[in-house]
Each structure stands twice: as structure tokens, then as C-alpha cells.
Length: 92
Image (tube, rainbow, N blue to C red; front, side, top):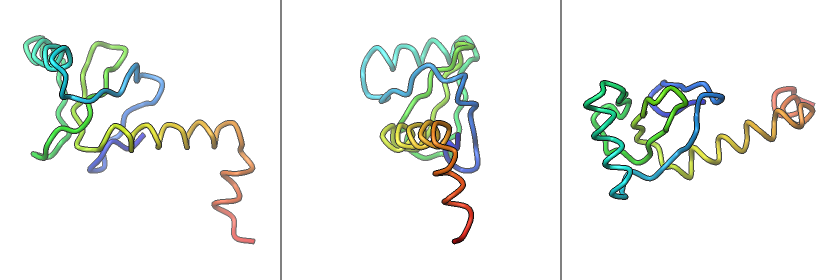
């Protein structure tokens, strides 16, 4: 899944997509940084979402959590309805 600036994360590794504003999430971010498990792909922009991976890594993204959620829903919809995905690609 594209998480911004040409970076991608394997969907099956994502446990959660969270807003970085809460105090517990900020604590998770600090812990991940000290454990060298923090991956920043924001390209210097403001962190808008944090992806929590099954490996314990946290990925900082500048893409809104709602946008990432929408991308996940669309991917799931296309997996469940392959005819829909083909219809988008093939001209009629």
C-alpha cells in the first residue's frame, strides 16, 4: 500500500493506522525511536499517521489516516470483487 512519496508497506504487516496526536501514541513513538524501530517516510513534512507493524516497527507517514483507511478499503473491495478491478483497467 502506498503510504506517500513512493513508499509502500505490505498490507498484511499493518496492525493499525493511528493518529499521532494522543499521549499513548507519542509514548509508543518515543519507545520505537529508542529501540531503533522507527521508520520516518514523511520527507520532512508533518506526521499525520503512524502505522504500527507486526514486527514492532512504527512507520511515520505524512498521509492522513483517513486516506490510508480508504486505500485499505479499496484494496479489500478489489480483492473481493476482481471483476470490479478489471473493469477499472479494461476500456469498454
